[in-house]
Image (cartoon, rainbow, N blue to C red; front, side, top):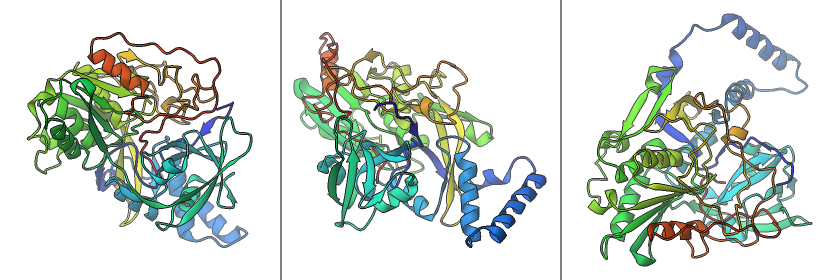
Length: 468
């Protein structure tokens, strides 16, 4: 990745909000608290008036107020944000797992648009877009200095329409020009298959509204020819999603009433203990875990994680680790240990506000530190591929409070492995998966052997979820 520094690496979305979204409509929170600061509001009014009367071009009140709201939130932490009408609508649609676009998660780097990860089986992935790519042009428009929101709007468009991206890729002397046809993106939250030796494999790409019930369906399908003797749950590159879905997934493997996660913040509403009970994951609907096969809570289990496992993924990994229900394997996770709520401020706009930190069942905060696997296993047999920032690299990130030793990413360092050799999560070439199988078979884990020389920063295709 050279010496570039990452800026604005939030999981900013034209699709999935990759974080923990607790509720919709907690407008009462905005009405409580300290009295309004009249002097400061008077100062704000004076600035507003000065701009309206003296700026070189006319500016609408809406544009100024929207900008002020966005500025207030962006100055707090990396995950608080203003959702205008388009972003609010897209957020609501995306949590259902279907939206229009290319199928890539993006951030910004040095004023350019950076691909964090393509999504499996999407136009972007099929066209060869790779994690780590820098998008220098969208059609004929340079992205240098272009806001992430504006870039995303340019990349979106009607289904079946073409778009051309110019890509700067490490190891390539010239930009790579890639043409993509936009399509409807239907993110499959859960995938599964039976591996050799009667080991079940389940991958969760993101936590959507139906993830819990989809998981049950896949676990039942794995039981058709008899109960698997072991299970691998793959949460790599899963940036998170809905809290109740994370609780439901955790509850599928834990005993009833087990503590899954707790949250703590300033407001009374932000202090809560979430248990493996239907009222905390089904939201008043029928208990979709009621028909779960009995083997699910007893079978030996490995959970695969990496630096792309964030937020809701870390909740699941932390809960299963603390309850000793599964062995966590892979690399240290992203380290997003904060909770956001969606507060509507009008019929079609809202703010996403960080209100609390979350804690694992044993009371651990993973904010800016991440979940440390029980078994550290490199991305490939030649070493790690992922060179991306962690929570601790983000500007204005929350502190941990329990642990001052924050763990930053290594985005400015070269990859350790020959990253021209790509693979798909769950494939026979998946080194971490093979080590999970070895572990469940009682065989020694293989250690990565560094390649003689690293090359371009290609990362394995596999299921990020914040998309354009």
